[in-house]
Image (cartoon, rainbow, N blue to C red; front, side, top):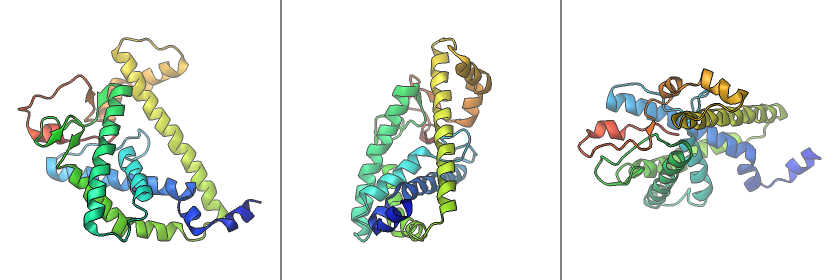
Length: 240
């Protein structure tokens, strides 16, 4: 029955199936994590993790950004570079604000803060840094996604789909685990004691010191960076 359904899938349904969207998320998240780490090493002269996951090197922001670019810009792959850049610029800024706002509300921390930089709209959006989103959208649509699509549209074996499902479970569990560790850290900052064995496990194995090492640019949400702080400090970003 599954084979018959697979055969009936149209190319468009296959292109945007769970299997393909998942690997687009992984590819975008890993590539973004690596590039941001290299960029920060080059610009700021130091290494710090840009991963959002305690167990796997991936940026949730860049992964979800790749999925959004793919779904929203799927009809613009052959559009002019200027139009793709503009859409990526706008969507990237809105998306980055949403991610920063949610991290602040759910975990009471910030992973980046542009407020001390010129051309910033609050903490989480900088008009100059949005150019990176526009450029990322352009490179993704013109170079990266066509290559990934070509690979993913090839006939996949049953074993590869099973491995995808297993890896998807791994990513789901580790993402939830990372989020739970951050949420528990927020509770500890409010002096709330552990209520069960799982929370005691988090306190023992994922203390504030451990999480700070994993997310070195993470800061309490109520920490305000003074306007005269050097831009190099406030511009460093840890993707959630």
